[in-house]
Every structure is written in structure tokens, then in C-alpha cells.
Length: 192
Image (cartoon, rainbow, N blue to C red):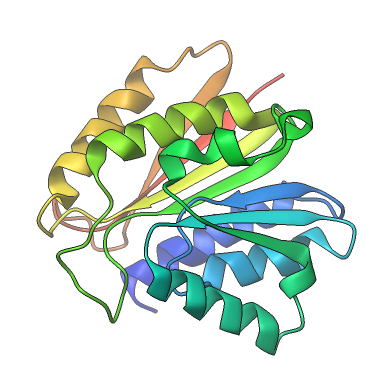
């Protein structure tokens, strides 16, 4: 198992424990659709997944993956930045989202110069904290070691340290091969 799949599986296991059938979830970065499919399977027929990405290639790959598994009816895909997710999530669901997942960096198999941007990511994780239910969980898989990824991971670490510890618990799960450029998983729990 690679260090990336180890962290992705860790995120899925944490989410699985916090996402009952009928829940509302967000995939803040569609990528190739793996997290979206996982969330759509997890929420069941009465749940809903909202997914965001700025790249049309990610949007199309995710739509195809959902269609192949007959899960399209459980997902609402939105071609927009994760930084604006609160504008696209119905107001009645604000504060009701059980799980929000981020997978940062670039789209595998696509143009590696198109990456998540630190400033919009920080806006998005702040927004995610407001959208989360209590209790709720936010996972952010970050990839130092590529252009922009080091700063993004560093700023996320700083952001976690400034969270209100009475309302949030932040943990960082390191790769099995802990090096400064190795991926890391940020896990933020919103507590009652």
C-alpha cells in the first residue's frame, strides 16, 4: 500500500464512522471522483453529496464514475471553487453537513501546473467549519513536495493550531514514510 492510499484509506475509515445513511456530505475537490463515489455509497439513497471542482476534466471523470455505479442521483456536482461552496449549498443544510472531504494538489493524470491554491483552500476550510454539523468531521489530504504544496500544507498546519480548541479537535496523520515532502492527512472534528 502506498503512503497516499494509506492516508486515503485512513480518511475513508474515519468518514465511514461518522456518516450515517441519509446524511449530507461534501467532496470539496472532485479530482477523479474516488471520494465522491465513496461518499455517495455511504450516504445511501436518502443522502446527498455535493461535489466541487474548477476543472471540467475532474467534473466529467467524476460524473462518469458515478454513472457507472448508478450513483448519479445521490450527487450534485458543481463546477465551482471549493472557496464558494457555502453559496451553492442550500441554506437549510448550513450547519448540517456530516462530512467534508478535501484532496488537495493537482488532478492526477492532468496538467500538474493546475493546483489547489493556498488562499482559496484556507477560505474553503474556514467555510467548511461553518457548514459542518456538530458533531461533524472534515478531512484534508495535503501533498507537500510539489510546487505550492509545501506552502499549502504549512499554512494548513498553522490554521489547525489557531482553531478554537473548545469546538474543534485537529489531528494530523502522517504518512508511513514521514518526510517533510510526504503527504499528510488533517482531520478536524467539530465537537458538541
